[in-house]
Amino acid sequence: MSKKITIVIPCYNQGIFLSDALKSLEACDASLFDLIIVNDGSSEEETKTILNGLSAEGINVINQENKGLGEARNVGIRVSKSDYILPLDADNKILPGYLTKAIEILDRQPQIDVVYGNANLFGEKTGVLRPGPFNLQQLMICNYIDACAVIRKSTLERIGLYDNMKIMGYEDWDLWLRFAFNGYRFYYVDETLFEYRVRGNSMLKNLNQNIQRQNEIEDYFSKKYADKLDFEFVVNRLLYQFKKRPFRFLHYLMMKKFFPQHFQKLIKENRIYKNFIYG
Image (cartoon, rainbow, N blue to C red; front, side, top):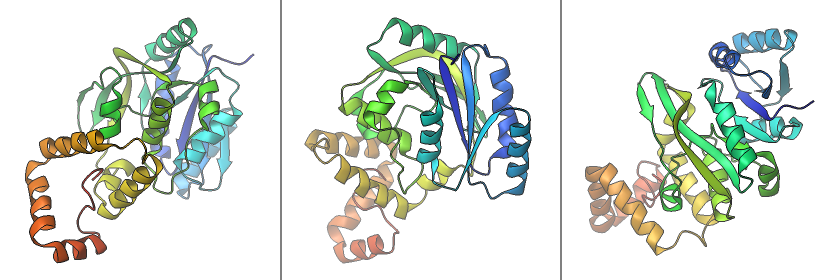
């Protein structure tokens, strides 16, 4: 008999963190969930040894060539026989109440498609991350909802699963935008439901510091959602950037206005953000 939730953990060279993630699942009600780990072509010997050991213990480990985060999650979703999916990054942890809370909401309210909540930060930073109630305008400006959300599988299948983007790290933002633009509904639980590890060398942090990648991401989202990114969106995004980094924002405007040739040269050399929308 299939469980209510399938927890899908993609793993690419993150074997050293898996024990923490799996230990957190031991505190959850085992009758509620199935677990699938997708080895996305890990090259690190320690990770491969750990995954082989977990497979020998009876944990469902799917091995594939390296295809990226989106496709790794999709493989687990396709194999799942559950009603709901919970993507869990290999370096994060679940709190016991998350599964029961999400199941209760999704079973009781069939109009809800995504349940998300707060996160305890641990590692290089501590605190509580509170995303707050769903707000489409805010979501268009920045991804404030973590991938660690419980999602109705039937909705995922209708929407087309994760986009296997060439620029990894923004797959969940793209998915949430597609959900929102197609009228699917989010439910915010103002409780701490999972733990998010803050690492200085994380994929997302490295991506956020890579100007070339940020410019590519801006091009990608601007083209894909051109009909959604109207004047109001641009104004709100620019205000967000100004509040976030006022000096960098003013420097950007001055360079573009008074030194256009040098500005274009910096863009070609990937030393400055292209339009300062997603950068």
